[in-house]
Image 1 (cartoon, each protein chain N blue to C red):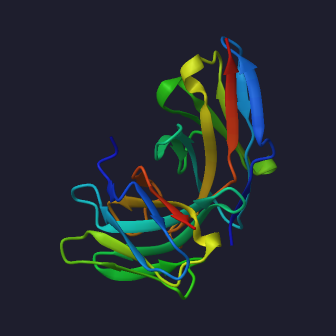
Image 2: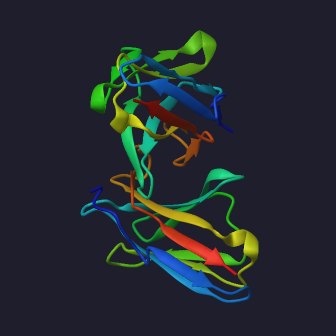
Image 3: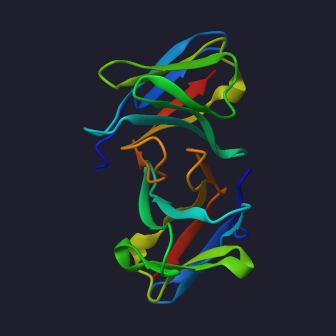
Length: 114
Length: 113
């Protein structure tokens, strides 16, 4: 079964600083990988996804993520954080061509200081 | 707005009671998923329905049940409620039965007193 680890429970950055949120997954084959964002009181919104092909994927709101098979990682990055990026971020892994469910990490809460 | 509608948004009830959470998927989506989000367990997959049939089952308790109706809306029934069932329950939908791209509703917050 697949699993996801987000090592950082809480990260604080200053507005304008760069951001990297870590995600490590465990899955025996090539996974589907996702990043979702949850703002307070809201549901989860898809930021970006990796299915195959180019290992650097671009998402909405200026986010990108890189799939590194050798490190079983799918870290999320943004070059310059805005105050509105404060939210909780979830990495998720799904199985290609098989299981339909997504397994989520426990999330990383991002605080942005002015 | 994801297009997924969940009702009610908030629900407060007592232990031992039964509640029903409702979900309307995005137009055209055939799959509905239920997730439970709590502080200690994070987001836990409960169950998936595809076009009216149960497709996948996760960590769903026997006290919980779900169904998807012919109009594709879904209901999650929680019975014999316990304090530990207090959580945010999310519904998500997707077009197919194997795609991982899920569209989430805003959730139903259940408080069991």
